[in-house]
Image 1 (tube, one colour):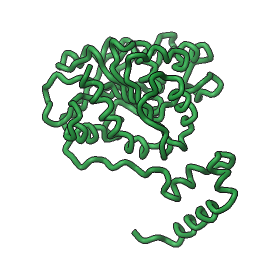
Image 2 (cartoon, helix red, strand yellow):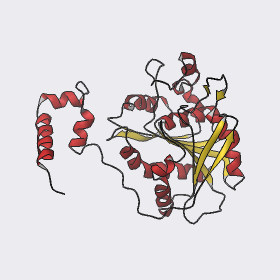
Image 3 (cartoon, one colour):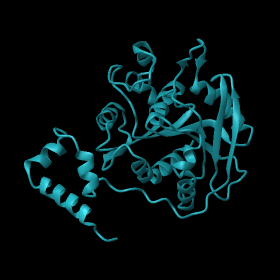
Length: 296
């Protein structure tokens, strides 16, 4: 690919910045723009490559959820060669703005197929609709409760067990809001029900004032669902954390690494809160989930 004059000027400007005091301030986050500089200089780790491989069976359906007081969609991915096997299950919790179909837009069908082809123990992945709930119970305008965790446990898992999948001990995978949800539900369900959590770019907060708008109904709701207060409940559950250095949640992820014992698998590495970073982490996420589910 040729280098345009505009790109050359941008790159040249970034390199000049790198040679001065300004670059150090950007790297230290004193000045804004570290993510832009890293992307321009190719220091963001790049995007993950989607495997060029045939996907396994994909099936979708809906649940008339009493837990959520609405119709909820689900999408199930199986690896090639295992259309009817009683596979263990990973529940993938989407990020804010996602749907049950996020497992496909994130190319997890391809990453799952590639992982199993490389020797990872086979497992299935289901994506479910969580909307903007932040994966914990919310109070609706009618006064009713929208409870996505109860929907998964009491409605989706029994449905998939009826299709021959092993749902006695599952795993959670997720991105952003979904990673928070995976950690939260693992704390609530415990090691007897949850084998592992793979949390990419976990959107976690240390207190209510710093939480994103709409993620909790108030300070009491935050306190009732603050994952930092109950990390000891993750004992016996395999935990993987992956976050980009330029991600706004990198600091919170460092706190999770420091607070969870034994130290989780994973690291803070080049990248940001982007689909590109999630794609780059997907192979490690598939290996981690399959390995832990294979021994569950």
